[in-house]
Amino acid sequence: MKRLIFAVVLVAMPALARDTRYLLPIQDVLTMPEAAGRLDASFRFFFGSNKNFGGESRGEVVANTKTNAANKSDEVACRWAMLSALIELQQKAKRVGATMVVGVESYYKKVPFVSATEYECHAGAVMAGVALRGQALKK
Image (tube, rainbow, N blue to C red):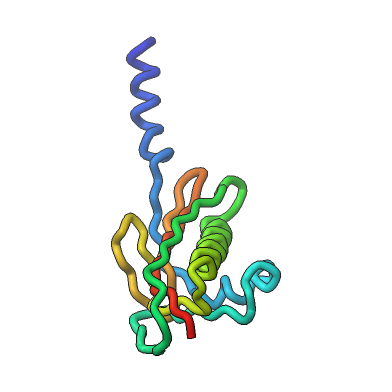
């Protein structure tokens, strides 16, 4: 009996440890109705490798957020995780007096993924996560 339970646990573990990588459109998150009330319209994000905006550097800001993925599709959970990451990035940048974050890139497990149009999200059985980093600037 113990062997049977052990075998069932071993078979189930990969399902619990799922870590599916998605590259999803940033614009889908920015146009969510929920984003309008949570992201400051006067604060700007610039995605991708372009960091030449002038202004005073306020340092690097990083956000690493997870959200509950239960009873949601991976894509919906990823949109919520991305929105949460943008909110966190905005809050951290504002705390240091920045008015924008430039060169925003995905930074999941500290591995950069640079795109002006897509972000990286990882979804599992119960959680989805997005990590971002960028340079906070005051202009």
